[in-house]
Image 1 (cartoon, rainbow, N blue to C red):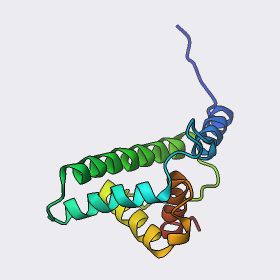
Image 2 (image 1 turned 30 degrees about the vertical axis):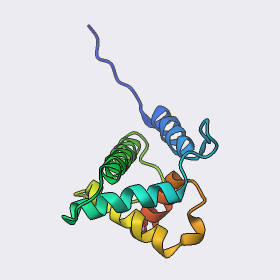
Image 3 (image 1 turned 135 degrees about the horizontal axis):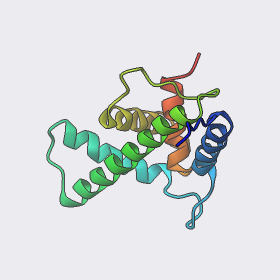
Amino acid sequence: MGNYYMDWTTPSRIIGACLVLLLLVPVADGQGYDGAKFLRACNAEVKQRDGLNISEEESIEALWCVSYVSGFLDALAVSELMAPVRKAICLPQQGITTDQAARILVKYLRDNPEKLHQSGRISLFVALAKVFPCR
């Protein structure tokens, strides 16, 4: 068998661009969940992490937040590996926890209530880009 060498430069840029576009493409229900849903769910996650008692409904919301934010961070990490081009978010080398990302989103949405009607995934992207900008 011969040696195979793949130049990932072009495919990785295409994949990276596709991942970014996926963040911006509307889903079946319009723009996905809005910021109000993210604030409610991630606020429940923060309360739970802080050791406060939360209802069963809030527990489900917290799980939804953790799952969404964790998936978002995973996709961000994969896109950085696949397409090391100009980025809007530069996480610390050691990364961040899902809890930290949820807290950043909650703070952003509390500080910007006029954004609650907008797409939550865009709010998460903007919140992380403001805290971890690339220089």
